[in-house]
Length: 95
Length: 413
Image (cartoon, rainbow over all chains, first blue to last red; front, side, top):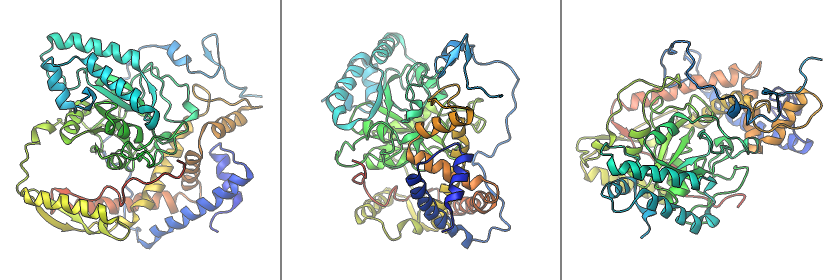
């Protein structure tokens, strides 16, 4: 195995995900298989190749810092899982 | 014959000649949906009342309008990962089950400005991750040609809706085949346009360096007309290109004499179904009879493409889906503290395939593995790009099978 169960737990915690022990075991096997398949890329010498990130290889466009969207607080807040007095209500962040 | 069976260019012509109204056309589409939807399940949300209002407005405009709005009064099916102001947008995820967007994606804005009629939001693999449609958190869409088979994915709902005349045209998104593959499985036309051609603003992001918006239609002419309607520069998408939009439909004159078409040998290797191989060869022979020159080409890094795609797409997905924290919208679990709230909301809101891809992408980007996976994949991507640049020196277009097989029987059906 390339991938251990502990690594899967570490990655799950980085990604803010949680799995049952059975799912964790299955996932470890599945991810291990996929990572083995990825090894294929090591057949290629890429030491002198530049990475490619995006086909639309243009410069980041600049624009005026102006408000373009109409204010619509009610529509935005309508999707909030919890709200109070026109604010998003969230769990306590600072103890 | 039902009016719903018309193509876009036919319906547009007949609307203009007042053979029927946009309201009659829209009603015919909804009748077709009510006859077939129980078997197919193409749509997650139908927008009947609003669609009929839009059709009425279109009819008013049709009385006086002489300008060539190509989509005026045309009923359209939209994949449920386009933000539609006031119409629920779920991305086929429990996480966004009740999400109502406060704004329209650029594509939808263009459709509305052209007075198209939005019929509803179609099913997909959750967050567009999958190629059978079976990863939807809600239900499985069936292939209209054989309901024991999948429509393909991730734009399976739009492809099925177009094939079954549950709309006149459809919209999808394509990251790694999500328009082209379901279009092939459902026997309709699908196009992934060039990057930068169509704005992605307001599309729920999956893998930003590859996501693209495109049409799913009943014929090629419709595809050209749809692309003319949705293409164009958008300052709200930083990858949008500011180039003139050709009139694609004007080039559909049947004239292909001298066109050089390349056939990549790596796309015809083991595992391809004989029927698929035969269909592609027949198409090639037809093009040759019409005057095209067929050239053998090579794309030597083809065998690495899937590995590169999986690393890049999952890495970008893990980053894009970090926004789903259950704070401002979407599912929020009850939990004892902040971290637990994030974790439980995501664990409850995402389906298994989405979680698997987030895990793989997070791993590929994490400290100690970034160079070995993500950077390596981006470098091999350069080699793949060079393959295409090299091949396109000797030909104008490349022809290849869309998939190695026809529509499969599903795993969960």
